[in-house]
Image (cartoon, rainbow, N blue to C red; front, side, top):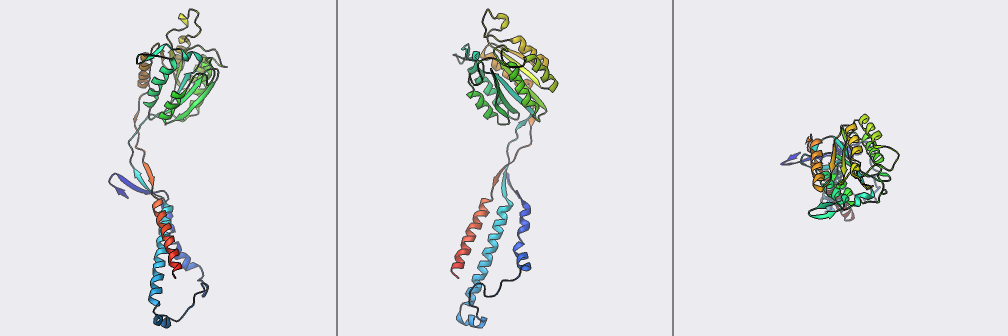
Amino acid sequence: MTLPGLALDLAAPLAFLLLPLPLLAARLLPPARAGGSGALRVPDSIAARLGGGATLAARGRRRTALAWILWAALVTALAGPRLVLPAAALPASGREIVLALDLSGSMERVDFSIEGRNVSRLAAVKRVGAEFLRRRAGDRIGLVVFADQADVAASLTFDTEAVARTLEEARVGLVGRSTGIGDGLGLALKRLDAAPGRSKVVVLLSDGANNAGQTTPHDVAELARELGIRVHTIALGPRETSEADGDPDVVDARALRDVAETSGGRAFRVRTTDDLAAVADAIDELEADRAPAPPVPLRRDLWPWPGALALLTAAALLLTRRGA
């Protein structure tokens, strides 16, 4: 059944095959024994003179009608009527993206700015990264965080808003304070390898050098190439190892560039919040190719209405029985 802009369908249409069941039962089951109800049976002629025959017959017809209404309402509720509401088409890419985020202690350094305010590196990443994730409707997105250890903060999901909120709640110290780039990337690859998508991407962001974990970034990048997973890397921070001057908290941009090139991805160098926003836009362009997917219908269950009718009809049957 179709209405303007709406449609009705059934979750279990075969349930309507149960409608004639009472007739079959009446035909196949043996009749009830006379006198089983305890009522006094009198000849029709006497009942007519007593003046109650017409009333009893009418009451019987009402009870039969109520019983059929009750049965029809129960069967209709069992069939699961639903109102189908059209939904707008979403972009779909078949792409799986995992953001692998460095949560080492150096991410607390205050050398970025947002709207004229000095903020930590992590605060800048949260602002730009959450906006990037919210723009990826149609992709399945996951979040891996790493420091001494690597952990899955958000499993792959189409709920980009939930992943963005998880990113906004991330804080340094959750998984240590060192920088295990290889382990973080390895965990991201493990999650993507088990995913069904056609196109799989890791966006790896770090502001340091690999100094923790059991694997090296280059070895894991070779694994990514074998698995067909592209890794885009973001080297975050004002200075890199070639400009260290004794500062241990500088980014190993060369190692991150090697990871990207080995896996077939792109390497980005970020020194300011504006750079970070530009990188997010660039990755959006690299991982575009999204087209409208078929609209996903939204269904609203209507079975409570016939269910309520069945309940009211059952109450009416009880009342007529008491009045008999």
